[in-house]
Amino acid sequence: MSLLELKGVGRRFGGVVAVDAMDMTVDEGEILGLMGANGAGKTTLFALIAGNLRPSAGEIRFRGRRIDGLRPDRVNRLGIARAFQIVRPFAGLSVLENVAVASLFGAGRERSIRRAEENAFEVLEEVGLSDRARDPAGTLTLAGRKRLEIARALATRPRLLLLDEVMAGLTPVEVSEALQMVLTLKERHGLTIVVIEHVMRALMRLCERLVVLHHGVRIAEGAPDEIAADPRVIEAYLGRARE
Amino acid sequence: MAEHSRFLALLAVAVAAFALVPRLGGDYAIGVALNLLMWIALTQSWVVLSAMTGYVSLGHAVFFGAGAYAMVLCFGSLPFWLSVIVAGAATGLLALLVGYPCLRVRGPYFVILTFGLAELVKFVVINVEAALGQFGRLLFGGPGLAQIFYVVLVLAAVSVIVTWFVRRSRFGAGLRAIRENEEAAETLGIDVARYKVLAFALSAIVPGMVGAAMVLRTTYFEPLDLFNPITSFTIVSIAIIGGGDDVPGPVYGALFLVLMQELLWANWPEVYMILLGGLLVAFVLGVPDGIHGRVAAWRKARG
Ligand SMILES: Nc1ncnc2c1ncn2[C@@H]1O[C@H](COP(=O)(O)OP(=O)(O)OP(=O)(O)O)[C@@H](O)[C@H]1O
Ligand SMILES: [Mg+2]
Image (tube, rainbow over all chains, first blue to last red):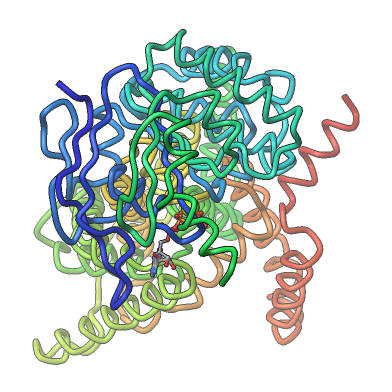
């Protein structure tokens, strides 16, 4: 059985159809790549899964259970964590506090502050931020903030991790590091991951399967090399370049 | 744990010192200390909601006034201490009722809404009193000044303890996450609606009890005084001058304010408001982390 299943999921904003009758499954243990031009509806799809937005149509199941329409905190507690494309650090709190909060809540729901801080420190070591633990999160660079997004999501002890362009804006060296990190985290924590990336190289490295969105519609699905050769995908991207 | 013991020891010493005031000092000294304790209790309570969640209440006078009104309604039929508890329960309940709709709006809208709510309740009470044919109630035979003082001392201690432990709890971590970014907080599994309403209710109980005790200081109930918006403004001013989302801020702020009142109010009442306003502007612009922030930075620099 697939871990996550979307059937006919749609969301409109007034006249704009951001996501249209979307069907998608994510299997336990895989890294699924989600790609598409700007405004294709990728982030909206994550918001629908994570409960930040309600779908205007369709149903979403996680481990067989309906989750569409649930509040984000409920969805998170069931084991889905989302790292935001536009990073949302708790800027006034320390890096450690940011992650400790996630450990106190989330699916792990650690009761003791001290143990939450210990968990948080371990997670920070995994993402390479432990030397910044005591600094205010607001002082991190963009690359640091992206790592903090991942660390916080991870500290909620998810089964499914939604990573929204966590490599955007990073240097090539940072991208390579981040790729390795995601693969290591997946193995160590037995995660299932959906990644949104524009960096094709990253998707090639991480995923065995890609889904391509265009104007809210799924236009292609398959292995990375199939996708790279798919005429509809090429047209969607080149068509955008010509606009 | 060492931190908690040190805090509790310090608190015990402070409470013991204040408890001596009615024995050693006259009515004037009791009055000044009472004033200080009242502002500490009110501002600590405000901090649990507004400094921790970032939902700034400009209407905390509503709980002070509602608690006073509860006392007036119980007066004569219940013992003093029981009426104080009833008042706290009533204002906590009031906050639970209005909290959910109020806390759906953020930022300046929440500020205005709390202010409006306080004014609304004030005029409801005035009209209810008029309909009952009451125009200012006389409250004879209440407790003496010393008794009121001890009750407010206990309330100040309770409010300090609540702020201290909330600030260091899982609940407090959730509240501070809400302040920093509400959407991120809920996506990390925090039930933000419930947490905000709980913080609101928690921040309403002590002010209700303080209002209940303080109304008996005069023998007259006047809604315009007890629901005075100046009370709300003063709480926010103390919190800003004191700074931070922890116990020391309100204590520094209240000490500062009461000192100013004692120095200026008696001699130059006309300068007092001007100076308070000026100081507030200076703190907001120049010392946004308040006295507490400055003291913490100074301590850190000293090592
Ligand atoms: N809250 C909103 N209100 C109105 N329109 C929205 C909202 N969120 C997204 N949209 C619109 O929905 C469409 C899809 O946006 P979305 O952010 O999901 O795209 P995306 O694929 O993540 O793009 P990008 O690659 O730029 O991140 C866009 O046309 C966008 O303008
Ligand atoms: Mg996006």
